[in-house]
Image (cartoon, rainbow, N blue to C red; front, side, top):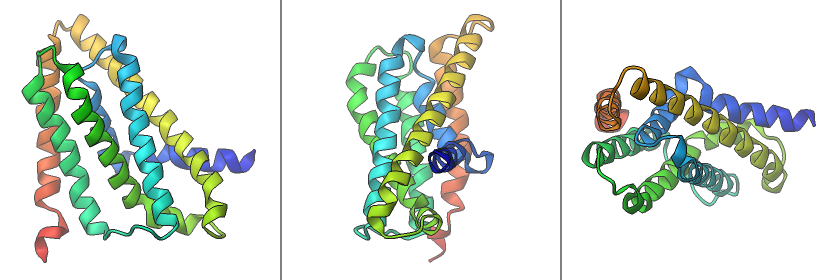
Length: 197
């Protein structure tokens, strides 16, 4: 049981770490266009992220996939940018059902990319061969999923307060937050070491 909590907590802290804010930025971009009534759709999206993240870790642990860290660190803010841009172009429109497949793909892709970015560290903290790492990996994935539910819940509460107390329309809230996220990730893309080749 203590091992479960160890890897569960690593997954939890992996998302909630203030220094790894890219994950939280992605979750903000994913969540701001939605309300509490859309919880099923949001749960599906964050579960797709966890699935992608876990799949990438499995492929990495078994030595099937390896991508350079610089490339990963470049692609992560691009996926965040894509979701924020998607929000800008669809804010206020009632086509969220139509756009779910695109968001689902981006979310799964972000999960895979983020998982590959974490894979080197994950392999160093786990002893034993590849098959010995599958159970801790699932415990870690459960921690990630729990942390994501917490972050999404907090974002939904903030969205509710902003829209009811401060009278922001859902469209304006989505536009403001998406523009803020774009403002944060563009410098990350520009400053990426991938450009200095």
